[in-house]
Length: 259
Image 1 (spheres, rainbow, N blue to C red):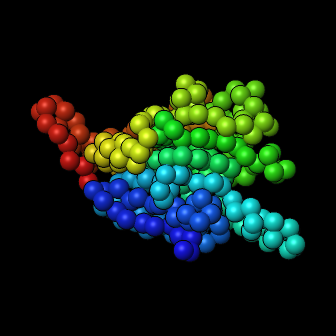
Image 2: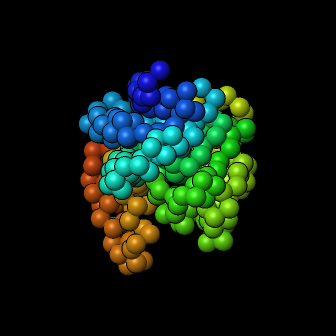
């Protein structure tokens, strides 16, 4: 079966499924391009309020295809550079995407699969899932924003432990460290991610986009700059029609229905 990124939209959530079962849902250039295109479609579709990324069957993603990487060693370095740039385009698209993106992880999330999960806004992981920054185990350094994501999410020593050691880590420890949002029974990660997405789908889309923007800017901004950005987003959202809907519904003890 060819590797593909399956897409289906249900109840306001686009579900992207990494499907490459013969290679343990390994990633590749075609999937990177499909991921970028799917998110571009989702951004333009008003009926899509959130996105869930998951893997086919009982595993999330084994990372890169080692057979392809081995073959690329015989090619010019630019061949692998272009492939990584495709992955990085997908990662950056996820980070800048104005709607919530949730990773639903069953089984292994290894290498670039772990990086992909970290790029999402929220991670729901099955209790039997396994995360591993496997790069150093095959004499490679990380890609997919792994050093950026872990370097901001964890103290340096913990990030170094995961990246240098290449050891497996379970969802419970990652939950305790604040990297995984929810740990759920095996086989229920997608259902829980969809339930979480449904909660977010009821929020005002313009506000969720503002929150994502502010979080993305916070790491490089001074307090003064961030306060200014918060002011600007707040004023813009106050004068958006959704604020009128939300405030009126709260005062009337009713459920808001945002556009």
